[in-house]
Length: 113
Image (tube, rainbow, N blue to C red; front, side, top):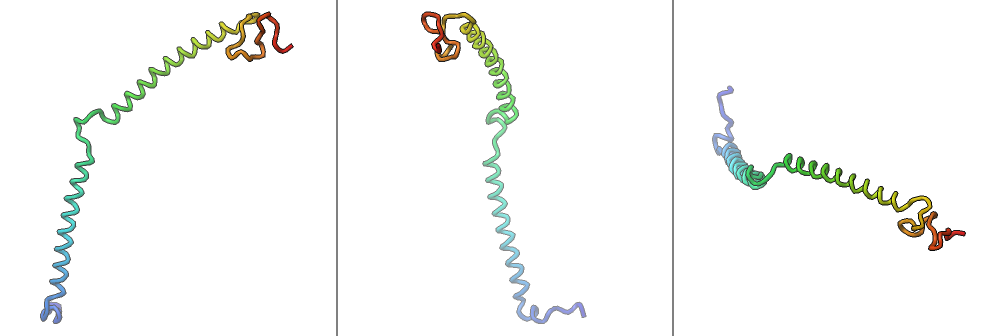
């Protein structure tokens, strides 16, 4: 007798109605949550015309760093030349900080006798 309904639901019809009402409420809540989620995603997603992309920013940073590396190498080479020019064997001038082991006094003799 599979065609017969449950006698409880025939008399009151509340279990099916309760389930249907709960499903309808859940469907409405899920739709509202989905709408809010769509709004949040739209707010967080940048517009395409709002500036450079991440790839463009990274490419710019890489080029700036490479330009600075060349400049720093030139400064380093010039500084090295200046240091080598100031510290010549037999030179009467003191080292850069004035306290080096090869520093000589005003009369040309070593301070460390």
